[in-house]
Length: 270
Image (cartoon, rainbow, N blue to C red; front, top):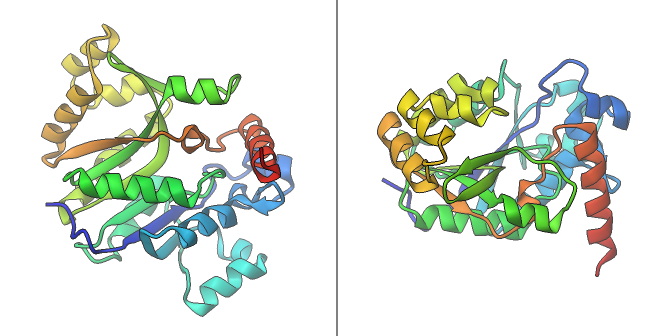
């Protein structure tokens, strides 16, 4: 059952590098990718700014980066020391980091999960997603943006998309865990996270009939969500975000440069 409509979301931010020598960190001259600057401010601090200003979010837990990297950023160090931000060491993978953080939070608390490389995240995106996720009545919800919307707003930017029969969608690195039962989704994520750039492989986790329907262009988003729900034994849903910037994360040096250009234009105003 979904959470109370009066509860603020606990936020979890995954901020560890996937590799020891992250290309974005190297290009930016930063100690880790999460601290690569976008328009002069580390991506991680931009994400924390958005969460702090959002009306739907209360406490925040940070998984990574390494303690020495946090110590090197006075603003981050002060937030952690003051108790305004809970820091946890990251685990071996994003999914195991997420599960470790979830296990430290009350089972009945609604949880918003995002990543430190969500460089263009804004309070309006956060609040829209949280409110729509809460209203869905689902246990676990993912944020998606229509691929056409993203391409129209940011021509030339390459985004991984999942091609459903009712249209392709881009992931937005926004997830809501709305019930105690939703924690099972973290285990499913652990099994498929190494396939995150291969939609067919991820769909294949739901069974080969589902994968075949996907290949043939017969699998719609509602059908996929029904199959996911049956597979996990919980109700899974999606929030379609009308914000193309919600689909912009920094997975590569090209993404980082693209995000910097977008942020600079946005800060400059119309």
